Amino acid sequence: MSFSSFNGAKDGVLIVALDGPLLLGNMFDFQSALRDLKPPCLILDLSNVPYMDSAGLGVLMNYYVSAQNNHRELLVVGVNERIQALLEMTKVDKILRLYPSLEAAEAVS
Image (cartoon, rainbow, N blue to C red; front, side):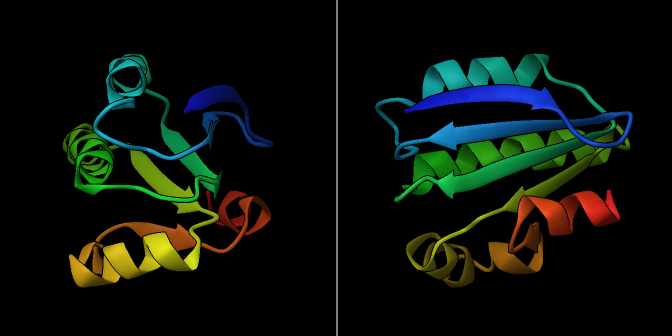
């Protein structure tokens, strides 16, 4: 799994795009990088993530909690059916702000 970041269309918005599955075996570099990211709004683009395990979900939720505690936002875009099923099963879909596309998320950021 690899990831890259770039500025969004609005000030204070950072987009992080992941490529590949987010799993226990490859999450540590990503988790470490996330800890250093503190933009007012982070959009996490999962469009190229085919699969996520519970450890990957934990990384997202840890960032979400940290963002909430520090008055920042986390928006998630591009979730496929498999990841959507995981989010629904764990009820995380009721917590995270999910958007179908980067454009939709940027419109509300």
